[in-house]
Image 1 (cartoon, rainbow, N blue to C red):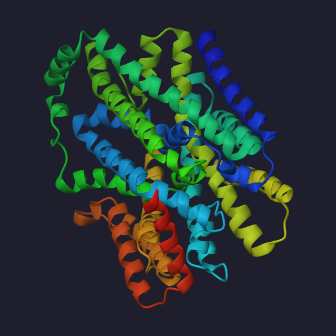
Image 2: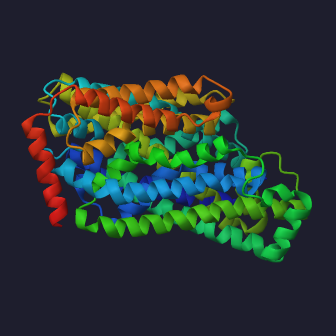
Image 3: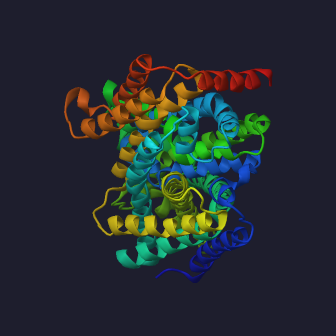
Length: 490
């Protein structure tokens, strides 16, 4: 039976998240506030909310589980992600903030693409919006499944009740407070996640008698877990490292760059963000790696490797601390799902309804439509999540690849290549998306490569080829020059 202190500490955390949403409900005045926080976030909130919305439950469930079952070879994915995140902060964050503000204050990714390529109609905006809605439906449902499994394992609830409980908490504060609520809850959740991942492996190492004792135990029971190459192939390692390419195309991360209050603070945000990520990822790897030694040394029968963090938190800590450690898992899940709900809502509200259906809609109408679409999207994701056999990690990998291939090459080239055109942009998004979908269905040999890499290459090639056959307007050319003159001057 679950101990009362665990329930109390877990409940306190959830009530704080809803209270933040209620606070920002009264602060939200217009659509820009609701979907981008009025571009008023400081570097700390920008950095930690970007990291927390990025990592999801994968950081406390999937990655430790991979290290537990596969050993240190699984750390190649962490290498790829850290490199990708750094390059994203260094080469995309500041130019995207300046470009989106310069282009009629673009507040969504479709908004940015439409303004960047001087679209007279809404074709590019609609294609972008449809890609976002397609992959976020999968992404959001995977997060709700993860939350349901946590509630199921922690509170002994049946799956359907656990799914409703987790979905209700996430939707509540996203509905109420919009972007500011999401960002500030992500900030708190990011701190909680990092503390949990730093403290837990230190306690594990202490309990098993130090690092040397842990390595000796692992080497005796499963020596292949100590080898960086055992159990993997060249294609397998490249696939793991290719995850880093996905960063350039994730809308829920890119909007964090767009919302910082001043591009001058981006360097500080990068330092905070990368420091948080490196500490959290190393802690996550250590939980799985040393957790294996603890479980083996104590004769614990762990049926599901992804529950290693849950198991350690319940065995090693008093109930009050265990409650907050379990809340850290929910924090990781919530911090991604809320961002995905908000981006999807902003796409439907700003880029489909406001741009194509009702251009004269007022701010109050748009904000309430944004709130309504949060509920609508959550209901669809909830329905998809009612399948108890849903595979969380495969859905996450699919959506991550889809966004990375569809938007990643276009984001980079739109910022750094002045010769990219609208036709090239559409071709690149379509080529990247189709390649990911088709490649996912193929198996064996080269087709075992993570679909993000071939999709990213196909998207980049399509953008460059089709842009050569169409003309860049003089205004787009001048805008690009003006933005980079401003960046270089600063």
